[in-house]
Length: 253
Image 1 (cartoon, rainbow, N blue to C red):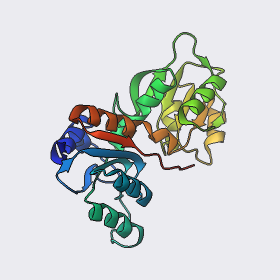
Image 2: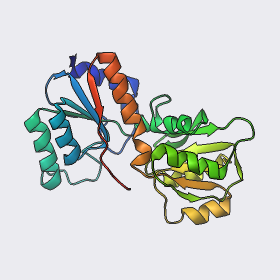
Image 3: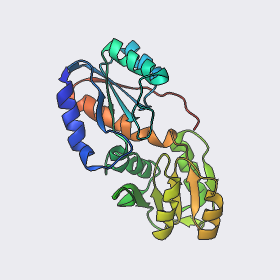
Image 4: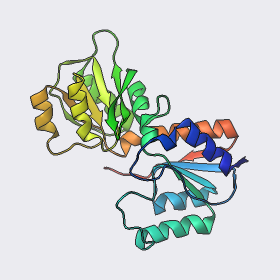
């Protein structure tokens, strides 16, 4: 058993959460009980995830995409009301970390994608509100064929990516910004990279890739953001001696 306050303090410190200008609050979003014996992690806050967590007897849910976002209707009605009802009725806490979990140098989505495809992370890039959240990674030797890069992304994410293979045949350096980072292809172009990996493609991505001579690979918003929250849950389980379950909610986006 661990104290909720201690877990949140570790998360906030480890991810340097307060230093990011984000699109919603990072950290504890809904407070439940003070003690935690079982943790559930998942990509996005949803009623389906909350129901699974309740069935598993979790006291804390950890997500990448939380309940509250800038510009949303702040009223507690509709889907938000139901989600909050599920949490409060079950006494479950909710913690969310967005950009801090993308950017982290060992537990972040982007660095874990890099290592997952056999590349070595070398430097942070792609700033959002003044903080880089993506990573540049390199392949040893003469690089790998661009078709092999697509195969590795597919194997890692469990789905066939959207791929515009307009860059060099040999990929030596690749930029990675998970989720909705399509516009950060411009950062990859500026850095003279051979390829760029993200979650979602913009409509104009193919033309930009062709004109800039860079390969653009979109592995899915959800699929590219499963890695950080799962790793973070495993770390908390080991550090605090609590039980951890990663719950996958199918999402083709």
